[in-house]
Image (cartoon, rainbow, N blue to C red; front, side):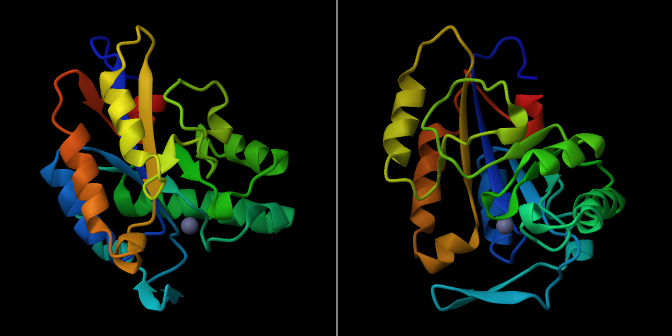
Length: 224
Ligand SMILES: [Zn+2]
């Protein structure tokens, strides 16, 4: 819940738990903003892949409890599988095992998730509800700040590489609506290395952080 005295809130959502989260979290902490990190508890630092010819390496999560301390941990599937392609048992394992392992590691029970590859269907949503997951983030940018009713198919405002990012930030800051306004930005921290654009997130934080009329919270603090 956004505290009563605020009409505006900003939140971030970053996926996959890779090495570049270290640099991103340092920035988030410096600017006193909050993020939800969507993690895959069945994968570890031996899991690497290429993004724009740059190797991306996962963090070893048991070593990262302190790193993520100021932020929210959410489910992203135990092995980052496309959940719409799984049989019942695999889907159950992908969601429940990830939730339970993350709870064990971080001493907070996840109540949210981000859909791997942005893929979901009604079967997936039903399983999430059984697991006590109350919001699921898609990858469909809606360029909006309106509160949403269907939290299990939640649409972010935009990705950090969205060409309208700074224009949206400007519009958000200028808004004087009486309705609650939520600016929700998502991405992967390794994209900043691959695209050589860390300056993008620094510029955004310069623009939107530290405002007395904005609440900076994790996804669950703002959406639930
Ligand atoms: Zn992912």
